[in-house]
Amino acid sequence: MRYSLPLAWVALALVALAAPVFAASPVPVSVGRSRDGVLQDLQHKVDLLVGPGRVNVQTDYLGAKAGDADPWFWINPGRPIQLTLVDRKSPSYVVGWYNESGAEPVLDGVDDALVLDRVRLRGVRVGFQVPRTVVRFGFFLTQNNPGIGHSTVKHCTNRTFNAPGCRGQAPAQQPLDGDPQMLVYDISRWAGPQTWLVACEIDDAGLRMGHGDGECDHDYSDVIFTVSGVAITPTLNSTFGKVKQRYH
Image (tube, rainbow, N blue to C red; front, top):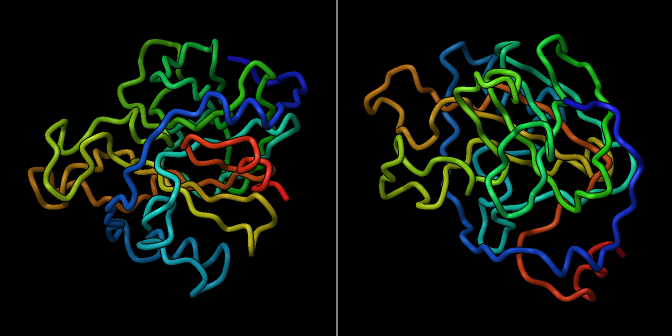
């Protein structure tokens, strides 16, 4: 895995050329209560981070409203990006970035890199850069370091790379093209420009609470981190003029 990457500036014109087409929002998600107690609920943690009443974790994630980007990716800004660990239930949950090439990431260290490893503690800030060969990227969550052949669970911010429905069988209320395992919230108004909060659920999000597995609480609090210094762009076909307008 590589941790120190070269500086890269990416032309906005490239964004408009290669974006795949998806249009599935709104995406239904139910953020459950944590079995670890109310102080571990995602809403409580977000209130502590940005202030109470500012972000509703049930309704303000990207993809919750019609017209939201779904799925989405981040654009390589060509400068250092900062990831801050808000909380993590287990040190075995690690986070990194992957190349949004349109194909499911392999996580072999070629077009991906570990950012948040096991030794990082709550509140730590990690700086990283994405190489100039990568135009757009997303984040992955695994239960073990990727590339060593032992990862049993892998989730991506692009939900289409995640297994759909209840252990592959989608119930009516779940999307047919991949479960949202990593919810993204725009907290730029309170945490600084281009800042996003990512809330991760390690359990199968398509498995309904109390349906076949009493251990699934779907609290989306297994790993919570923020990423700042990078813009997000919807995965929709666009003209260069429209993309340029987003940056005015």
